[in-house]
Image 1 (cartoon, rainbow, N blue to C red):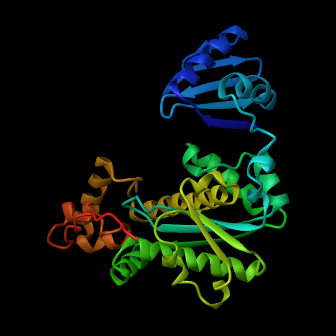
Image 2 (tube, rainbow, N blue to C red; image 1 turned 180 degrees about the horizontal axis):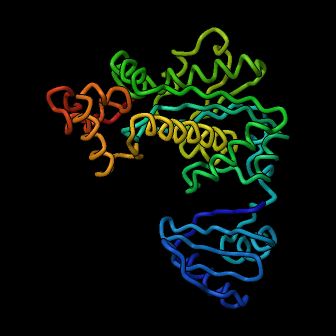
Image 3 (spheres, rainbow, N blue to C red; image 1 turned 135 degrees about the horizontal axis):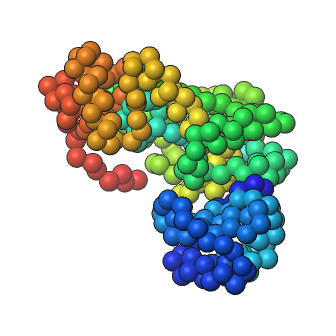
Length: 315
């Protein structure tokens, strides 16, 4: 392993600082960290957000197994993944998406097939939830590892803004659109791995939303949804592939329209959207953005209606 991350409580972060001092680590400063320490070729950064610890460098596994886990986390996980989570190493698909909360760009849904050998390779390669990876370069490097792993099967469905806006108007809500996209990825993966028994994704709605969209090939697969499914290696790998496709689309289309298409729904994103409307009219947004977002209404209120108030989903 060349990197390791784990959430910490504030008390655990404080205990880790004391432990590093006792072990003779040298402390320095890094942006967005509570503290940063280094000894020999091992670095330890504890980030404010979370907080969470990031370990990098030589001697990482030994530090986790003999210092971090027994003295700070008080649990043994590293090297025991197959004991604690055996289902993660059994054949299954992991499905995840990127872009659903971003005004600009597509909705990308990706799926990855994993078995025991693939899961072990992912574990050793540092595959983890894309939201825990801050570097686009790292996303692309891990995506390359995923695609070149022996025995792998992957599929990515990128729904560009124009198609997304049409589908959203057809389905009427995001959950139905997500269910349709998840089902398409599962069907495509089953064409490559027809004997795969189950598919796992993060819980976004009633699983029947996906079941209703599955075609003949997918009628017998077992669908599982759970919160924080990204802790599963297959789902984590899918999140990386989806994120890569999303950021690549933003880069390509941004160059084509001569604008920086940012992520999320920030003030900078809104400013870019205003300039696009000024240059190409309200319809220009349909080509690069999800126009059911309130942002579209704020920028071009005469062309895009305000979204209805959010209603809590009920079974």
